[in-house]
Image 1: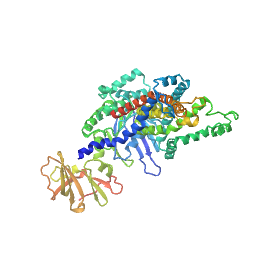
Image 2: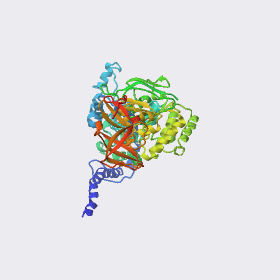
Image 3: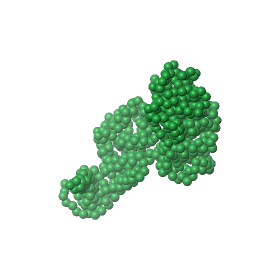
Image 4: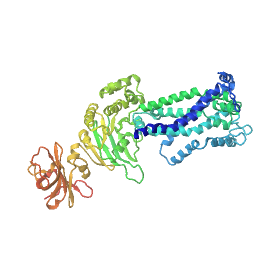
Length: 294
Length: 346
């Protein structure tokens, strides 16, 4: 009786997780492949197999190539900023000082607050007419009163803006991961380095950061996934504009597939995210495996 | 080589609280093995960390080689330190660990290799150079930590309980190795421990500390045979010195000096009547627990330690004639615990 119960208990406990993964990850994933090789449109039940036609048409589209390039720039720049900022914040926050708890809470806030609300706030801060940032800059006589910077209206500025706002949003998450890594380094080690004659930067670059590499790796991999597949900030701030100059793959897939009704081409675009995500997933598993071994 | 000196060195971690180290005056001698001994919380590690430059003194001065080094960073003090955890760099190989201080000091590449090899040979870890710290045993880690410390030929060695992470068996052999190592390199060593056996076995001189205060500085023989106060008397020795209050003073005698009356005596013996209540046989020796009887000592608990070879073991419950040679009686003041002039007993 006991044995029989144990035989189905394990699988039964696993079932919700399996159902969840199959329904919300597996089915959409296969559906994307199915759509990408067909001619599906929103509002029509017709399906004809068209082979690689959608991929060919996507690759010929200069807007797609631009979006692919933007995705890479967007992800790379924001991750560099996040890693530098996250480490700096972690170094500051690991020290004991008055008001540390409050500061930790404030820094975590952008991550726990709904991203859309935070981004709408930024939209107003960067608005062409009502920008508080411009108001301040004008009053400090740092920019011309009659042609202040159009944060979301000029291609380069718009890209910088979305990168910075996205960095603002994901920075707390990396900071928390890195902070855990920093506090896990025994105090003895940097002290031994100091006695051995190493200065601050030698200790940082030859002792502490190498010791933190596995944790930095984790923060980077998570950050890459969050950034490469995210479109919230871009959707709210620029909608990919001006002239598709801030369009990234996820937002382009959304605009083409959902708003433009061309589900097939949208699916084809989104499939281009796959190689990067597979690479990241593979490295994550390797990191996890190595950590288990150590 | 250089001597380390402290002048009225004090560390108070939080204003208003008792100091972790209070007014310590210390002077090491050339090439000496100086042991800081005390229970946990006695301030011995804080004292060592101040000498290393890892902790800033609240007041007082630290001198190395005759120069005040209070404002110098650890790297400028030319000291080496072995940490309790060894603090090896986990991402570097053994060789990388030994090379690190040389790189940090800008030693030319060719010279680095020679020195690292010399240090590795000195400690017999030449075969471990490519390993990482986590692949080493406790004893091997200790040797790597010593090699990393010796490689740049420091003027002073600071060691913070380097044997406490080893198991009991390994500890005895590591202790001998460390002693031989010190004799070979002849560098001044300041060694922190809470283990009196380590202190007695290795120290040229022992600094006995408690609550941030130095109670006595002396050779192992001096601190054991001539304790400056009742704290030193009871902290050293296992079982500790017997302390018996006699009105205006406290009289102390070591358990091994409290012996049956028929034991040969070296001078005037003060007799006691001792009723044994329980005993422990420890192989090489026998510990007797009981009470004194008669006179003003009646009812005081004392301990006697006899060689196991002594056959006429007193039975439990029966009073026996015991005694202590007059020279082995130490007298302490009641309030301060300090040593005082002997009083007539009997």
